[in-house]
Image 1 (cartoon, rainbow, N blue to C red):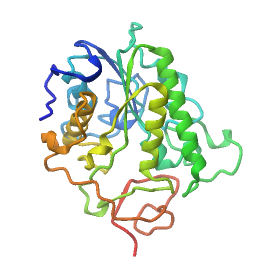
Image 2 (image 1 turned 30 degrees about the horizontal axis):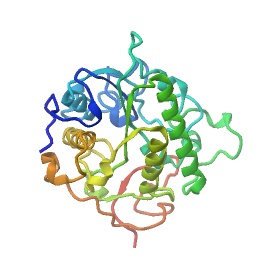
Image 3 (image 1 turned 120 degrees about the horizontal axis):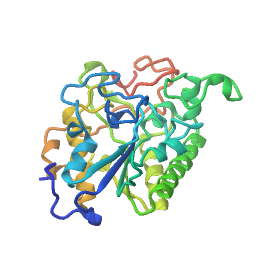
Length: 309
């Protein structure tokens, strides 16, 4: 079984004991006190999640502990997209620079877990026009109509792929020798009976397409993939997105398995024993106009009551 105990006996790619790790992520990877001052945090910032109150409880903290490493910097920003118009978007110079430690230490390993907000919003422009607190511009600062598209076309996925590749290039420029591990996006559960249906195509581009874009960008940058979606499970979450304490352990265990070169087999991981299979039950092209989901395009939710009609 995969364990999150410190000191892996045979880590893939030669991760050394006491390696320095940095995190590039969104709300799922935030924790109050771990991210730079003034950056938006979700855990113990916007909300309290039972059992997730210190680094050892987070997915990234458990990965670091497993490999006997130490945290260099956590450059996660709640609500941030990859593709935007400057900070706090992942593809901004400030986000890459924040991966270095306060004393200038560069990471040996960078864990990248981003893209779910790009998927939910359908792109940086939508996030700006939706006036998200994490938007990288103001609506009046962009040309064109001030509206949020409920459905977006393939060009949105192209922009995401280019921005993800650019983000990795910035990481590589900062820490040329670092091993970069990019996590894929995975479905999650919700404790609410009104959120039994995970949305696999919120604005017309499927979650799997974002994962293909992540894999392509990672391959082009010489980065590794921690394909947590390949396990085929929905990790435990408090709202179908943000992991609970169990969900943090599940994500960590899947990442560790991938970093150690193990197959994406849930049977190898004890924390996944009771995890439900990631099963799609709605096959609509997008969620526009669906009475069972959030009808306001100026925000997004990732689960609903079930397929329409």
